[in-house]
Length: 279
Ligand code: AMP
Image (cartoon, rainbow, N blue to C red):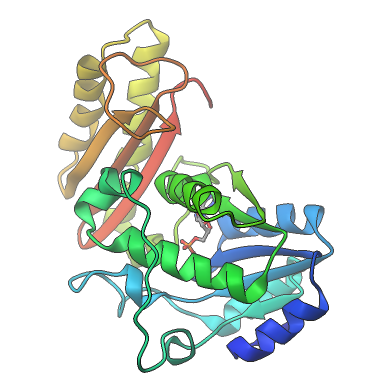
């Protein structure tokens, strides 16, 4: 495995391996969720490039850019064992040099859910992902459904901007107790780690009611919210039942309905989601 820090060197490598590359964009502090994306990349392409970049433009001023967990040495070991060929870990100064002033914005989809609580977040995400696509020129890029809205926004961007690559979405990887893996879980203490289970429990409560025949979103939402509200230390940012394509609100749920939620546990904001008819 090689580690490339410079944008120019990454572009050189990409030219030499054009048409063979699968890209897995990450912010590092790798876990089994990231590993599942690497395995899929390995299966689908001759060359696997994993980018590791904690992208400053997708963090708001009061968000956790500085406290976001980082451990590049450990990430190198994990990625190398998973069969990654190249780690691309650029510096912020190389990605956003003096004079930088270009941003890519998807409208509509980005005003819902996380976009409503984190203004500017998806503009930062689409900007950095578009830059990564230009730098690495992958034939496919792999993302997790853990960030369901992000995947939807990136698919939209790729279609709207005629980006010539395949976007692949992979299932959420969870701990055995149900907690969705996230780099931010490392910031939870032991008590908060237990409290964080309210996200997956709330999903389970909604699914149970749905499977028992409840289709009213208002009723399903009450059931799911009650689980979070019972958990002291957890505060709901949003909990919404949405059309999985448009991300717009619904009154009646069906098998394809997305349940997405964001919950604050202490200072850590966690997200999770499910499609009611899956899992
Ligand atoms: P991050 O490093 O958190 O920006 O995530 C990088 C990629 O890994 C994104 O496409 C995420 O959706 C994906 N990812 C993060 N956590 C998980 C998980 N628990 N299961 C599947 N994919 C994940």
